[in-house]
Length: 342
Image 1 (cartoon, one colour):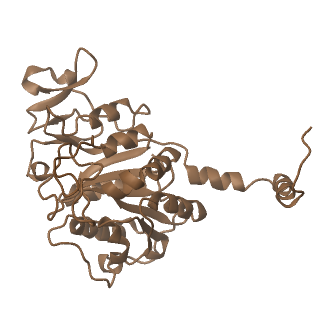
Image 2 (tube, helix red, strand yellow):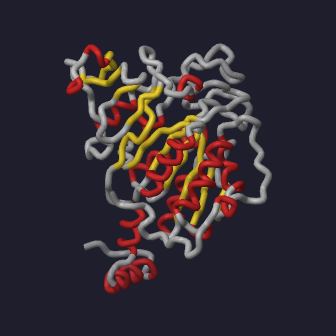
Image 3 (spheres, one colour):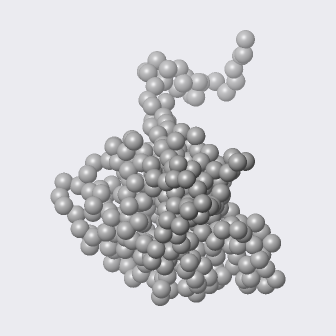
């Protein structure tokens, strides 16, 4: 697979976690899952070897979007929902930078929905961390685009009527080249997924299930238990089983994915995960197993990781046109205000 760090110079001196810790007071609620993600990120960056001056973090608006203040790199606390657009500009102008986007379920999927899907379909070389706590935390507990139907909040006292977004399904529908899901409290898995995401050349989206202890506490408790039967681990090249191997994913007679007891099916019937398949159909189908009415479990891991042409590489190539074409374009821009079309 191609690497997203290919054009980024590495630090000439060894780095450590403290160098990525800023002098700003971290201001999240006690017990917030954001702390765990921040700690994992600050520990990961020295391992990648990317110098702080070659790292940029762009965020939108929300609790998660305070992230740039707490990491001692370049960063921008930008506009609500517009972080992917700003990050696209940075990535195009500076191929020597590792560009991260930090956003939340409200910021990315409500006002920022179009910016997100277009950054993914264009395959801009950015790494997007989408913190999903299924609630608006910064504005005090309104239902968000990922809140479950019937959610009772300050803005939906009779229960939300909205059908929730599945961020992974949305990203795969936009033909994102790298899509993954992980959990804030599983530091090892979180680090592995983020490492794979930043090493992918193109747009990487990592949905991070993140607990909001104040406004939506316990939303993902079932997934955080040790050896949780609610976690469907996705490992490339491995049969998809969970609940200590007692349950597995098979393809039914109708061609659709089904969950069956492994004791009732042959090992050859189990679906083998292929994250590198050019066709995103399997990844899309797996995303549909997320916390359904009949299955209180969710796939966790890398759904898709494929090579595709990268938007910023193509853009730089296009503007670096031969001199004769460039001069003709300049004549057109600075010439007459009207033209005769033959």
